[in-house]
Length: 429
Image 1 (cartoon, helix red, strand yellow):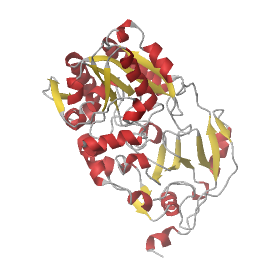
Image 2 (cartoon, rainbow, N blue to C red):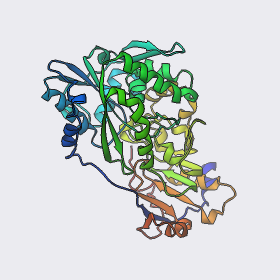
Image 3 (cartoon, rainbow, N blue to C red):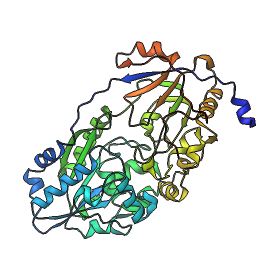
């Protein structure tokens, strides 16, 4: 037995109870998407922009979102019905290892292929300068987008993970960071996250003035990672309407209905879930002082990476411990371009690496201070998008019973470990 195992062997882990969080669940199904998109784009201010023979670029980012391929396909269909020739570009800054093929791989992992969206996908890291900020920073967009007759900006509006402001993750950021590819993203990030709340809309307004933006389509999701609402905005509406939509998105986003705990366990993280692997607006794992929120915890740990993240562990530096399974999947060539572009190196620092899930949890419990270790307050979630059902330790039951937004659906049970000390049911290499 190693010295680490010897130090942890007597740490008792709590029994856990399955709990359902009763969060609002209005949604649009995948079957409804084509009709919703068709009706949404019928007004002249949208449909009138699309003319026969036009080559129209549709943006697609790197985040996993509900009905992604269906929405893109429906937008492309709308263009084709009017005689235009749509195509899709990966609009994801430096993700995918900052390579054209890597970005295609990211889209494929999200179910976005030429077959699923019904039109070509053109991937390049080449960009075109379309203007400069007042400070002299280059504003760039993807070369295929710049060469198109028109651009339809598609993306999800949600809270950002490293800064807060009137415009966070959304249409402005999709134009600025997503379409900017690695070079454009680096330019916008060059002065650090302290200035992102200013630079994202500043760059976005320059793109609106100098690129052929036809209109934007935005998706807002509910707390269950489902499409809640689809919105279309004319170019002149983006500046004024996106901040309102951001507030709406924040009011209905995922959250953990406890203000704090001693230990937060996250089963899986990945770029398909959040830019930082897990959304700090849920988990409290912020890497910068320019955003705050989420649950407060003394210790946090991660037990696996998603397949869709392709080894990208950007954001993992915000937790205290990981299992060896996570460590063996880390891909530095995929992750570091993303981290370097962001300018925040702490995103990708390596936490303590434990030999299995049991010791990862034991380490977190053992190193908590000023708590009753026999009544440890532990929460376990699948990931920061999937928080309808969570597990809480037995010591938190009284608090859960007092919250009308929580439903206790299980009995206290020991955490199920296999012979190797890993939690039963988590993805294995």
